[in-house]
Amino acid sequence: MLCREDVARAVKTIRSRILNVPEVVVVLGSGLGSFVEPIRDAVEIPYGEIPRWPVSTAPGHAGKLVSGLLGDTPVLVMQGRVHFYEGYSPEEIVFPVRVFGELGVPFYFATNASGGVSYGLSPGDLVVVHDHINLQGYNPLRGKNEDSWGPRFPDMTCAYDRELIRMAEDAALETGIQVKRGVYAAFPGPSFETPAEIRMLRVLGADLVGMSTVPEVIAARHIGMRVCVISCVANLAAGMTENPLTHEEVLEEMGNAAGRLVRLVQAMIGRLGARGR
Image (cartoon, rainbow, N blue to C red; front, side, top):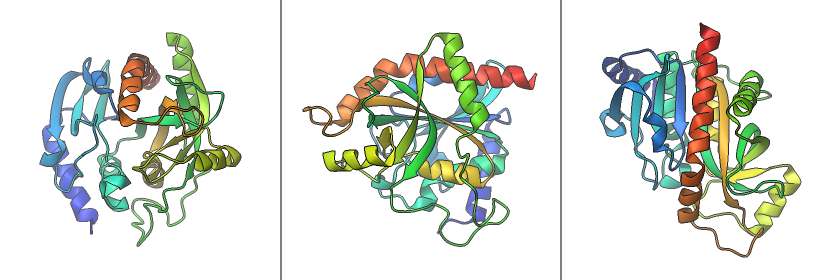
């Protein structure tokens, strides 16, 4: 059982290693390691060196924090996340978010790979998430509430920050990158969804499907962080083509889209920094 003291120990470890107090956390999905290349004064902290920090086991997730300056903005980048299908508990999955909240980071930007549920999407599309459907079978806030982190019943009406959504779309226009808006549905994995489940999701109003992100968004909003999520459509979901789904396909498409996704998030952070100045 993780507790507030575990979070405090992780915060102490990170603070002792980083040079700047981060303004933005960026969570990188599979195949987006190039995001950290322009970071100045970079400090790397492997997850295994942070007390109680969950270690990534999924392919394409490097498993380390990178702190430094992106332009003039202090950032903290997660190279890899953990998932429910890896065997982690809900509280372990959102442990990093709790740590970021205690560090005082105001913005939580996440990226992920997804399957396209809507027929209006194609592999390689970048989608700004504006809402989600939680079908993972759990909520990370279950159990005793830590009142200092947030209320017992947090509102999720605007879980995805409306101003940040507009900022992402403005940054996309500025950089010549096309983006769309969509609703992300989260399944537990690790098996891909069935064609019947994808048809169900379409009826429910989902545009994307994946196996991550939603628990962290819930925890981030609970603790008061402002959230933006950008998803890359790695493939069309089950039953939409005759091709079988593979993780190799996901990694390949993320690699193809990495340049655009990285430029978009960097442009967003630049806008945040300019606004702060």
